[in-house]
Image (cartoon, rainbow, N blue to C red; front, side, top):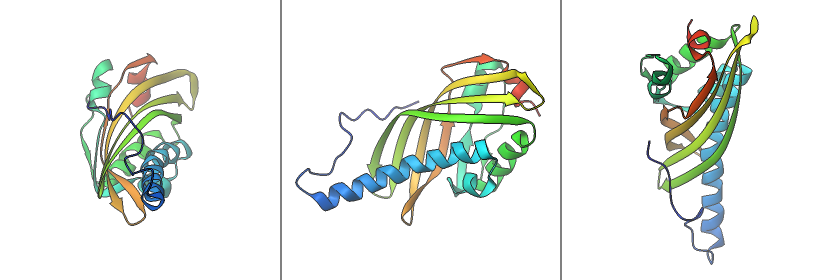
Length: 170
């Protein structure tokens, strides 16, 4: 995982209010893509969840799953990501996602985002079976009009508690 480690939040010159506002908008939209990813899962809302991704997006959950012996395939394509994740969770697993420590680096029409995401997963039928994950996210995004969408998302795991194998097995 490569973290965004710039020593400041904004790169626009302080004396250029228009550039500062534009950069702040881009940064908010970059973060919103990750918020749509989390809330779309939590609400089981396919349209909101799909809005987080570019059509050719990739989601790599293998680094996180390897921590408990899981071996998920690389998910390629927005439709595959939405169908796979919501298909695995809807009616079976309730989730809540919290995003923190987000850092953004903008480069024209692309952006990098690193963040820590705490994700709670509870089996709907058995609340005693859960997995609480603290995951570093490494995200590449692209501009899509006035918003940003995820092109590549790599999820690692710093620690977990509970039984991820039970939660993530279909």
